[in-house]
Structure formats: structure tokens, C-alpha cells
Length: 593
Image (cartoon, rainbow, N blue to C red; front, side, top):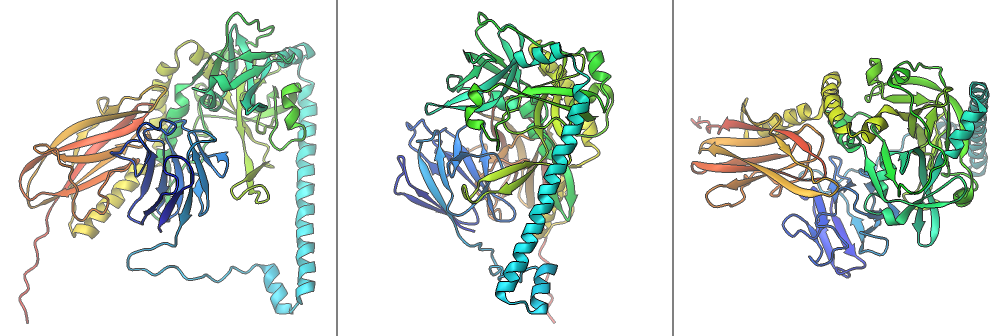
């Protein structure tokens, strides 16, 4: 499948770049050594390594972000994994940054023709229309009736959801003292952004200490390095400047790690579908700014004693898909009630009380309530609201890739237990995270590991490509020393180098396991010449950032090979590096007839 980049603005305007099937990742940036689409070095609107268009196994393209660098597709900021369609337009760096359009051609798989048009799946409704011989106009009426019936069912379902929520809220509301609800409302602030002179509601925060407010890590990550664009609006309409933000280190770490654990079916690995855990952050303001009311945390004993059925209340600023969202900066927070439905660990499974960091509840959520406090009848905060189950629909009336999120009828939403905030405030988050990673490893044993699947594919490819048998495996690097140190708040290119002796008559394959889930790459060099090495049968002549990167060589003479493990990271990347070697197969003698 070919992809063409048509530059429409910026320093590359008017240029066209074509990439074929052999290019699995197209990196945009100013680093000429690794980028496929290269911007001038002085054009610092674009990062040195800004982002990638990555080709999937199915031949489609998706977005791969590097940190928090700005990438917008069709006018809206994108997330990791966003599919790219032909005709999509991009902006980099900022809204008026350099732009380009992508054109995606038909797939071109060696030895296989393009898939023919497929026969359409036939539903019982369409079969009925064909078999009975309904005319076009009558068929249209039938379809309209079916649509109306479906809409009626959907409308009834929405009404039932609303009624169930109302009944649950009414029961829960009776468990709270009015004084605690008043204090809750007085401690909650709107997180807002200045968008070209207009004030946009972005999330919710709440005061817990002088100069400090709590919210979600996905909110603080959006604010980071752009503090001057964001501010707080208090209960009385006062505007408060943001000085600094802090995100829980587990947020990015678990977000990466969960990609390594999943399920395998028919040889295809699927990562676990989990909520983003450790979604906790702190907003710091000028300590001299008086915060009239602060909320208290439930004690560790109270948190571990929580049970399903506990009533909960929350105040936040819901704006997504709601009437009045444009006036949210001038509106009060919304008070809602519900119940805890389950308490689980970060893998959303049963666990001992100390590991039940995820609170599942029925308080309604939507965009804008991210960061809201969740209190128990005691009036103390037990959690920080961070997401919910939704059904996503495409809204082509808005834009090609626009989506509408509709709350799920399951009434299951999520909050992070508040002790994650306590450890972040007290400077204990890194130490606790190290302990939690041990727990991740133990719990992850019940799921499939991405690397195990990758090794199977790696060995299978060697047998197909080189006609070899079972390999000899050698662990080159692993344990605590096999780590690429992160760059802190900013992306940083880091690498480690190892040596390996190779000799003629053998085939060598190298594969790394990104145990932390941070994509890494492998390069091979001849130590004596510093020349990059790749085997002639390896179609990828450049390294890629992957969870299990590989490289292949055969040797025409004894030599020392340097194996460079590298990445562009803002957090530590733990890994293991393996060498596999096979004797080159001996050609069988042709004895003739």
C-alpha cells in the first residue's frame, strides 16, 4: 500500500514524497539521521523526532505520537493509534504549523493480486426485501420503519438508563450531610484553556492543600509545557493562574506496560483493553492565593474497607455533548450521586484490598468531569474520577473522523483511589511504583505476553527465510542494568551498546524485549569500520521503534558486531536483548537420475 505526502504549507510546501510497502514507519522531524520526512534543522516548530505514521500488519496506517508534541488531523488533536484515511490533512507543532495531506493507494503485496470486491453480507431484513420482491418505494418504507423501530428502542433504553440513574442517585443522596456537599462544591474548580481568545472548558480540579489542586494525569499532561494557555476558574468565577503541574509517574509507565500484556488468537496478539491507571496529577498555583475550602482524604484504613454498594457523590464540570457547554466557564459545578459497583486492581481483576486502586462506580461522567473528587458519606475524598465506559459513533456530519461518545448502559465508570494522590504529594510515588511493578509482573503471568508471540514469529520467519532448524539462544543483556534512562519531562535519544562475535557459516538474529512497553530499536554496526550492518535478506534496512525490534546478519568473515539498543524516551525503558544463531544450511547434493 503506497502513501504519498503532499506538503500544503510550511518550508516543504509544494513537495511530494512517495513511500511504498517496504516502509513500515514514516518519521516526521528535523533529525536527518532517522526521519523519512525531514524539515529544515532551524525550523523548530517541528520536533527533532515529531511523530510517525506507522503501517500496521493489515497494511493500514496509524498515528504514533512522541510524547506531547502537537499533531492535529483534520483540525483535531489525535491520539496514539488513530487510523489514517486517504485525504486526511495534518498540522504539526501548532494550529498554524506546517501542513500536509496524505494519499493512500491500493495495497501491493508481492505475489498476490489486490483483493477483489467482496459480496456484501446479507441481513435478514435485506433477504426479506429481495425474496418477497418488495418494490423500491415499499422497501424504503420498510427500512424507514425499521430505523424508526430501532430509534424507539434506543430512546426507550436511554430513558431506562436515565430512570435507573435517577433512582440510584435519589437513594444515595440521602446518605450525605448537606454541610459535606456544600464543602465539596466550594472546593471544585474548572480547568480552562484560552483558545484564540475563547475560554474552553477542559477538566475539573479540586483543592486539597494550600497552593495545590488535584486532577487527572491526562489533564496535567495536556497542560505540561503550556501552563500559560491554561488557568483555573473558581466557584465565585475568579481566575487563577497555573504555575506548575505534576503527573503520577505510574500514568505513562502503566500506559506503556499494558501494551505488552494481552490475549492471542490465531497468532494475533491483542493488548488488554484497560482503563489508564495512575491517572492522578497535581496542579500547583501561587501559594499566596487563598483557597477558601480544601477537601480531606479518606484514611488508608477507610480506603481498604470500601465495599461495593457504598454511596458516593461527585462535583465536576460535564461539557461534552451537553447543552450549555459554551457557558460552562460561568456555570457552577454539577453535583451527582451513585454507588461503588466494584473495586479492582489496575488489571481490573479481583485483588487484595491494598491493591484495589481502581474504583468502579455509577456516578454519570462525560468529557469535562475528568479530575472530579469522589467522596463517601463521611465527606472525605476516596477517589478521583477519570473515565467511563462509552459507545463511540462516527459523526460524518461534523468531519470525516469526528466521533460521538455515548455513555454505556452498563453504568460503570471509573475513579483512581485517592491514596495515589497522597503518595504523589508526599514524594513517595516513585518508590511505590517500583513495588507496584513487581505486582504487575506477578499478575501479568496470567495473560499472554507480547514478546512470547514475537519470538514465535521471529523463529518462524528464520525457518522460512533461511531454511534453518532450531536456534541457539543467548541472553546478551537483561536485569537492572538493561535500561534506557528517560529524559524526564522531555523526549531524549538514549542508547546502550553491546558487542557480539560473529563468524562465517552462521545466520544471526537479534531481538529485544521492551519489558516496560516503551518502543525501542536495534541497530548493528561493524566495530572496526562503524558501518551499519543488515542482512541482504532483511528487507528492512533501517531500524524501527517497536516492542520487539529485530535485526539480522550473516558474516563473510569473523568480526565483532556492535548491537545498539536505542529509543527516544521521556521515561525509563527496561528491556532484554537476545541473540539467536543458526548454522547455514548445507545445500543438498543433486545426484541426478
